Length: 173
Image (cartoon, rainbow, N blue to C red; front, top):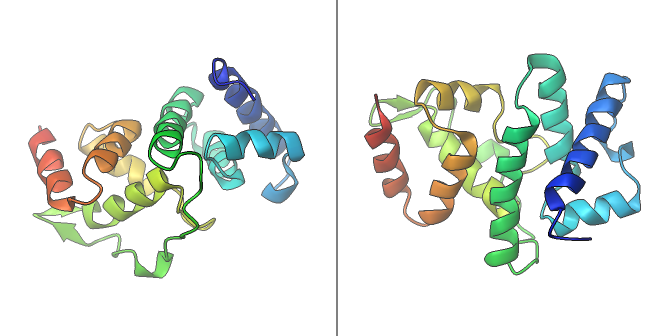
């Protein structure tokens, strides 16, 4: 694996996932051979990161590759910088996520997106939970926040959720 051209490697893997999904393959565990899986792992990514993005790209036209790349780059940077290339071994319990209708300071979805973003940046999302799903994208659009930007904020304040909330409030138009 090379780091200099990782974005080209990721684009190739993304294209494979999109082609697999377009061809009707709905079994993510069959998408990639061992070397591709090793490359994903070296970037701190999982099969579901590609599958979910490819599925939503085909079904809804988003996220595009550039957004996927920016989200993946935030995760990769955290993985290599903070985790020193070692997965956390922890997985978020999706049943403990706040309800989609919960609000903080009158902002719906925010109580849910904060733990999802922190789990995403740490590589701790379970296969059944997608960061930047349709609900997340609606939240981001409503608040004029790019999903990769929110990951960087989650990283900066991962142990200070009130600062994440303050940041979102400051972004209100």
